[in-house]
Image 1 (tube, helix red, strand yellow):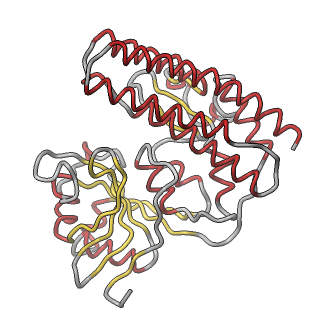
Image 2 (spheres, helix red, strand yellow):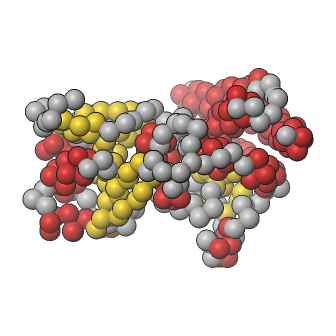
Image 3 (tube, one colour):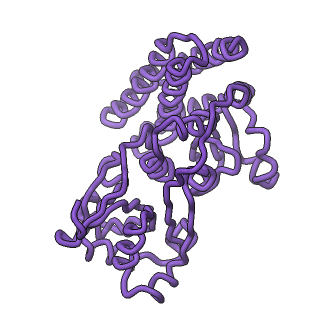
Length: 340
């Protein structure tokens, strides 16, 4: 890169699911000082009963908590109004901070962003990661879910980013009117904690939150959340509801994508543990479980194209099989972890 451009290290994330995970895991170094943090934490899941959103469950997980919790990244939050007060433009702000080694995450309006399916079509506000710039080409290098729910890396002209930033208003900003800055911290390292992994798998099986959940969430809110393997009964209710309605518009694939990501990262976790000599285990069964979740998602997508109750019946059957095999494998993994 020349003096007129800078691109910070970036990679395709191991899982995407939601932007706060995808952005975090595309910034985070995948080295032996950092990966243990990921594999110690991305174990349990939760689902909010009121709005049906599913997600990974980490202690204190809310909003951008995965990024804020991992000490391999430093975090700054800048009020949007301060940016326009102290910088001539949002473009100047981003260039300044990328030059200093900071990744920038901000709410932008996809209506203004050419790579987006929403470009010049409808206003869709979302958090976008900016990790580089080129002053000669006058573009920023960005990532987000631009088309068809796929996380991708795209150059976007300065003026489009500026317009996308200016088009955001406080009541449309789930980042609470903040722009986030992240920088990789090279000091220190994380280590694999077999006990934490085992306790988290057990919590997943017992359908309970992580030990310290009560310190982060008030009781009324906690009553509206389910944890761990209980997600299967809720996902089955979703599929039954969709079948009864016979309406593709009722389908929200995201909770099922969380399930698939959960199986993928669990396979990667045990591949890592085997590679580093923590245990002996053949991950083929975990690979098979990940493949089953991919089959489930394909069936749901197929149903959305052709409304056929037989397809949905098959999807429900596959979901039940995933549930049964998942619990069996969790018990096996706990036995293996206890032996070390």
